Amino acid sequence: MLGALLLAARSLSLARIPAAAVALSGLGLFVLMVGPDASVLRASLMGAVAVASLAGGRAGRGLSFLCLAVIALLLVEPELGVSFGFLLSVLATLGIIVLGPCIMGWFPASVPRWVAAAIAVPLSAQVLCGPVIVVLQPQFSTYSLLANVLVAPLVAPVTILGTAAVALLPFAPWLAAVLIGVAGLFAGGVASIARFTAGLPGAAPPWPEGVFGLLTMLLFSLVTLLAVWMAAHPAGTVKLVLDAHAGIARLLDRLPEATFCGGRTSAHGTLRVCNLNSGRNHQWPLPSNDRRRRQPIRRPGGT
Image 1 (cartoon, rainbow, N blue to C red):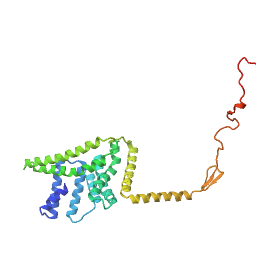
Image 2: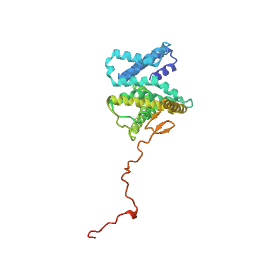
Image 3: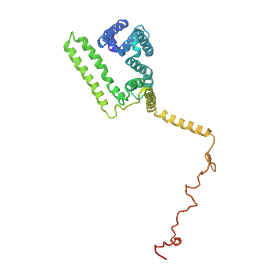
Image 4: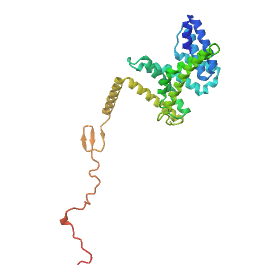
């Protein structure tokens, strides 16, 4: 919303400070329209701080904006500190700011920038939010990353066109109806993708509850990041495997020669066959199959 408002203000040839004032005013009206939810407040305050910084000619970092927004909201409303919605919103933004650029940098130059961003943004948010989500709902959303990638192009039209329709409804109802219809098509696409991915086999397998589930999901998130890095760096992956193999070989060479039982000598130690037989008692041989040594069997009543 801030991007659309700033673009509209700059298209009217407004200066930097008036354009920022228009964007902030529109942002305040948007918050009043959708309701002061925890995630909406966090995102709005963060965006407001960013716009104010840009208007003053000082472009700061996203992490600084996030910290200022979180501190200000907790000072104004301390109850947000125990809100899972607020926590998930902060973690998602933190992942996008901190991990997103790193994951995008893993992709080779041949991959388009928008493709790398489409994968890196939802993945970075999911990695940090996953351990908290399994505490709230002990199940694993198998296709959540795929669903987020597919619906990402549909979210902005729904938000922007829907908000514009609300603003135009008193003045041009027919135009507002057209915008609402177009936004409804995009919203229907989001719902269809959500229903499709939720209906796929194994879409929501169970996950351990409590602290164990949180720790295992954290470990799974780390393994996921490692898998993405390995997929984006095949040459580096091969080098890493070879280096690990060489390191293990050097470690085994430094170990003392192991004596398992003693006796036979090999290149890596001393070996001995601890059991010379296979468990058979040689004092009790099996019956012979030689017919000449077999004793005749006497019939009953014979002499």
